[in-house]
Length: 338
Image 1: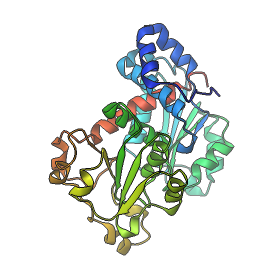
Image 2: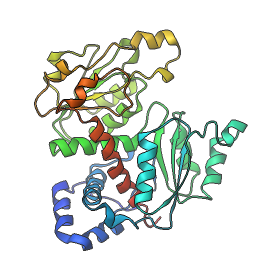
Image 3: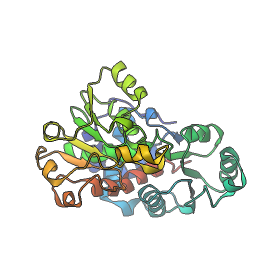
Image 4: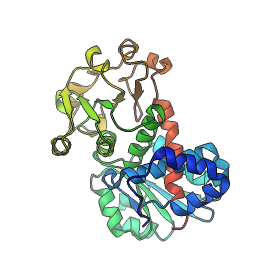
């Protein structure tokens, strides 16, 4: 595995790549290597993120130059839960890079899982057909189990309620593109924080960078898990909790990271209804934010962001989704020599 130096400066890398032209692009593709399995945001380092984003920028500027990076490779997308952005952006990224894609969009029903086959057995079979496996699964420990049994590279496209590492990377990339930094930021995370895997992965990734702080805004039955708060306390990172989404909070933040109330993850209808519709971001509230602040959302949304916000210059959630293509192209490009 290629070890990335933690002291690399993003601007310095980007400048070197720009100056080097095509030769720099080829060297970057050959030198940059993703870790074999991407299963948790806790694997990330500042150096890894820096170099990944440098490659992402290079691909974004000249995607056609990378169209044969994965020529001859087969990518398998194995999704046990519904997905639009993650699945399609990974598959599009693979195709643009020259790979072939084999896929099942509802493996929970349209694979041998419905016959009782274990996840481990399914993965051991699929690795005989593909060079890289990308999987989304409903169980919290599924990614950990996958990386233990697979000999081909594995990418976690969302596991249970706790991990979505590539979403965290595209979220970080969106923030970096807006602010030019990943430190000294105040982020408000809003919605179903107890069951929201995107929030966990984002917060853990932002903890790598200095002087970030968090405001966790959630209904009483959807507050962020104690484990996450313990991690923040142990790292001496400031955070506060509240159940109010109001102007006084929004004036202070750089990023509002909205999430939906996830009906499918509640134990019962009554608990879901206790949280539903409690936190809605309106255009009036967004206009209280700083001029350079941004609104993000991993999508899909239900009713938590008023559609009027879409036209607000602070809205970035569709840009955020589109950034997923470029970041995932960079991740997959790291498997050129796999």
